Length: 231
Image (spheres, rainbow, N blue to C red):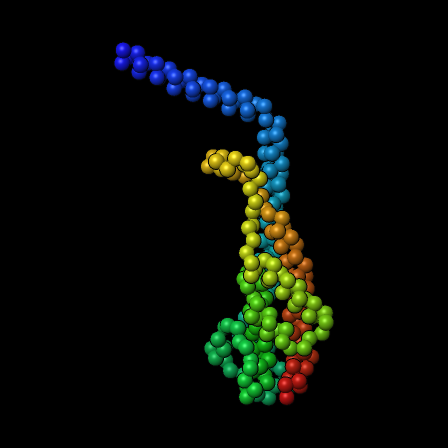
């Protein structure tokens, strides 16, 4: 009798497994067109994303190389030292700590104030490229009167910082499965979130103006205005 019960249970388990397999096959067959369409669309999307990411990475490398010399503290100090109008000596690079510097002491010499201002320009650009919060540096840059076109660039940088760096957003969204979360243990397909796509577009637009911003703030004309205003 026990042998019969054991055999009966084994047959039940086998029967249930067959039923589950048949139902799964029917569901997959019934939805084959949707599944195929999903994977085809996702494959195309992944190709486009991969190509776009590769292009963005190459552009970022070029941008970093382009700014590398300009963004070094040593080059900054050499530049300020080379300006003939500056009569006050500038300390060597070891004397300046590579961090945000708020210049509030009126006793500090004007050329040092300008150096600190440029140091914050460096840090802002570096943090922007690295997608790090640059609120403090931006506030320091905006504290000085600037032409409207330069302020527009800084305003765009502020929007970018507030929208994407201060408050972090999810970089991807799940497109399959949507309604059956338990399936994520077996398969999960994601794509770049709309927020990230807009973020990349915004960053590209700012990068186009970044050179103009840097060269203006490093220009001798701006330095003269900066010095004359604080004298």
